[in-house]
Length: 549
Image 1: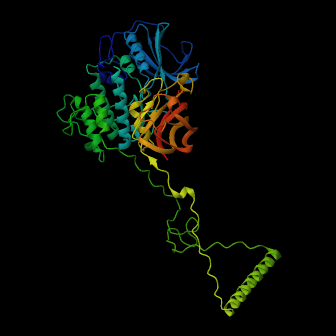
Image 2: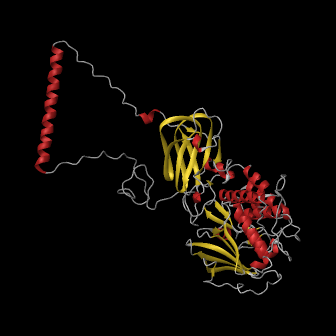
Image 3: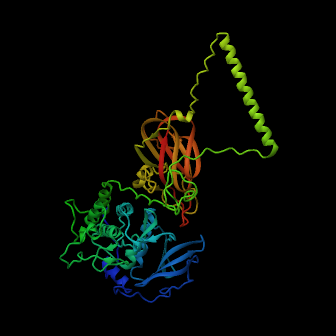
């Protein structure tokens, strides 16, 4: 699909000019809008008799952005407000409606875009638990694993948006939100640029350079332009008048992952940065996404060891510091004494002790008499019975075999081929619980907004295998089913009726076991009820799947 930039009326501004003006608290002069009764909304004002404005976040260039409350659904939302006669009102409402149609959960979703009573208002999700990347970086740079997650998710999301002709044009540390460890979302797709009148002749290159700058900042805690920005110090050498090349992330900070450092430079080469390898620069989010996928997997860092205060590391120890030993002194390596059974008190204990002793004496005497009698008669005592090995429990006979998943695809009978998040499907069985595949957002009802019976993933084992257990980890309590295709099925089924139900359950950690092992090549993980997120919407997220038998 051809690139499409946000359409605005003159005067046009570049992203850099708009950001510098906004950070200084002023905006580049534009044609002032005609006076309007809604030009200056205030806290407590209601829009569409539903959205109550609570806190003003931005007031700039004729528009304002607010945290508000949706009194109908009782949830927080974000609102952009501008007069209907504003010179950019038409482009804003067009961008908002196009963004809403994308429906990609990697972006903060536009919920509504309406012109009413001489006011244009755009309603979008409000994520109370999300933190802007600019705030996250105040405490230090990201580690290699999380930086990889950031650039991978942002580039994949923007590649999908550009395929629909939707550039962002204002990707910054303030518009990228960290929603959890290694999880990021983008806000303001197309809308932020339309509000500020930002355009670009090469929108894909503009967004790719911005992603490179985000990766550079994540690795170094520096904004890769001389003046800095978003609370980060700058790095000299990238301005158009500079004769010096931009220092690579490896040169700015020791220990930076070399592959990620090169990727940042290849993405920013569009504005004068020098690539650090002979590889071609990345000029589109799609190219950058492919370059990231070609990197070796970066594992998550090991958690630091936990040292317990007052704990003495010895082979054997009594008490928190060892009995009779000064603090820090090593203890002798001696085995603990066997436990002594408690004695019964009083006369009962004494009588029992004498009774047991008498029985032992009688048993010894009887055994001696029988042995002597056998020797006198010339008989040899019988050999004691051979000891047999103890029975082996069934679960010790063989461990269940985990089957490798050769391929997985989204399964949506209503839309063959899948339409949720196909790029993230490998995350569901990559061995990393920090990554996941997720569905789109659904509003109002946990059962897919009452639009579908379910959604899932079809796992291809490559050839028929014996299976009996499906283990699934999800984010949030999710209802799902364990289904399989018949033993003779060699092509991936397209109908739910082609899969046999073996087990079902709910929760975040699922271990579903069939009554009897079955032979199949195709396993279906079928989600039937979704958890509600902090934003009030419903989505399914699967972080890890294993199939065994």
